[in-house]
Length: 527
Image (cartoon, rainbow, N blue to C red; front, side, top):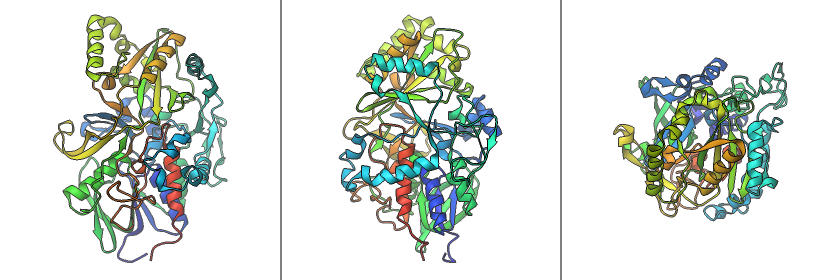
């Protein structure tokens, strides 16, 4: 390593892209540091977060220092994880390969001779590292979802989801069973239903249990509570400027020959926009920055059981799924106690492609039937009685981000969503409403839409993609097919923002596979 740099590699963000890159480059002899704006969490933190939203949510301006962030923009609502381990702390550990439509999408098909063939070995590596296993448990939600699949003539596609969870003895710690004995001790899943508030049990294979754990054994330095503001060219490498995420005091800049941005779509785009437009330190970033933002063509619906004795919480957050057609994927979700606040997001299930008419129908329904419409808000222990369906599609629709002062962000400089060319990311999926209605019928429940979608006309997603996408030339994207930022040697983007198309299923495995592919191209430290 050159004496003028602090590290060979600085990685911003510790999610799937950053964690993979940290381990693989450390294995090859690079001196690596990971900067993460979130906290390093303990089992006690996760246990409290599963019961009380005060300890779950990330909103530093409101004194909330948890790890689940909710970002609202004019055209979309985004849920993401902020902690050491990134989105893996709050993801449901669903590890699915996308269908053939993903690989053949014309937006990026030309960037590889055969994406399916090229990524295949990296998917296998990712599955081993993330400990994919089939969920052996089947609860009442799964039975209802199977009946829904039958009613939608898709029973042949129904099944348990492959998950990154250790399904061993929940009452006994055992030596690492997944990483050839090199990982931490593990304890099996206790079916508590709290995957999306972090696994206090230690059964979920979040990144702190695999990639990050092994990376730290090799000397990778992980610095938590460090928010990167911008990146500056320095010598023949880069200087990263940073501050504390809520105390706001500046922190000592760090330098490296190579920088990898893996801060998730929102984090990575904020850094690149600020570096280009505010600080003018990376002025030649492509004008395509912020384009081709995908919500995974997602919609969220819920069904509240009318049976006061119902308790659906036993099991993993997501345990089964099906495909009602060749582009749509549906999973069920259990919620933990700390998600109780989300009942106030729910309103009557109303269908319709016209946003204004749909919103008017929702409001009319609530005015004409206030008792029925508000039942969901008045339900005690809502989390025990609700099933949430996440519906995703491998469809061609998008939004985009610009950068500037925003009313929604208190007039500070931030990302701003905008309508893009082509079909807009949806706030309504007919398949989602159809599934919710059928699920309600087979379970004896009441279906609901998310009001942000039905009244606010927002696309709501936990799987944001794009914005700094792969392309052949700078006029079409921000990075090349090897994740290198056009015009800036040794600056890379390795996270969901690199993916130019909707994956159509939970994208964590795909991001991991792409990061494995990226890391495999490096052989030895730069001189």
